[in-house]
Image 1: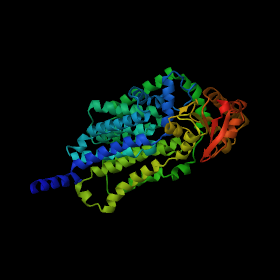
Image 2: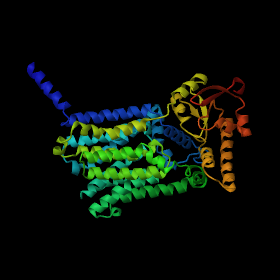
Image 3: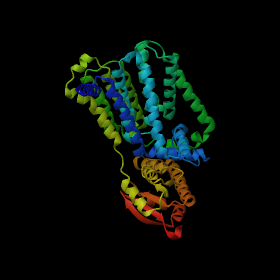
Length: 501
């Protein structure tokens, strides 16, 4: 009996020892399970709308005319597999989306680990440390950005960044793995072209180390073929994007930017710099630090180019900064690790964990959901009049509502109003912008008249969108059968009266 107890105790001590791969394997599995839970629980407004747009396009509505979306088609159709599987399995789309995101993260980590094998060697402990770090960054850190295009892009780009690490070390990956990394590169850049900045700096660094030009390597021409093929498909099959959406982007979306000083003072850039500073304090170095930090620098460029200051835009920067910090720590020489104090070890955790908390911050829509549920029918049809899609989309997911609008928000008019507030417009510009706003107001009236939503939300936080809507006679007429039913956080809830049904 004592022999059994001693053996069990020794086995438990071995499992709990961080010098053994077993606890890191368990941690990796737990983090991936937590990622699936995050995907189920967290409501991401952009993902909800893009799934609505994808479902409508799959059912025959014309994208960019009947369904007004600001992003190119891959941003919509990348969610189509989840919708198809959800229909076949008769389960909620968010569950399938969460599962596919976790599966994609597993594939990305597996391919990246195989690419990095020459540097990791046969040390399972080091390999699983890297896997656990990657599982946290790809699964848990996204938080309120889970399933966003930035999240998907980091998953897709990780194998490519791994190829730059081994190429800089003079150990090129097998051809098939390089092609896989190139596919991820092409998908990420197709999602948003400025994600190319994330790949460019590690690629230039690897070139300077290996002296071998990138165009001769499979990952580059594979990525190039994917992106060029996608660009041709957009031109051929979605001409409305260039003719209908591009002018709207130029007039009402792209000019709206946060001031540079405001972008620089948000938490995102200091947190990314904090990862680099902690790595310096812990005397970390090596290619597994350099390549991800350069990718993070490219992510910072993409964040600044977009200029909106939205937290999820900063996720690629924060993710690669964390991967560089923890990746270098996982492969640090034992002699250096033994020299770390408890404070040093704790500091290694601080930037990624604080970044996760910052990314997790989200607008609480629970009170508005309760109000809508109390005054409206079960699974109501609805529309929101707001410049922010974050007003209506969380309610759609929380209440399994049906969205009747042809766009997620009045983003065109919001951009026009912001430009009129902040710019000195010429009469010609003002006339052109007012025409765009008038068209959107008419479209809203048509959506309400045809869709006859059970619930209409009016956002009155920053701007009185109800007063804006009622300026149009068609909208006012369409709203004639609605009455005020409640409010939460300066968002009014209007429902159809019995006479209006």
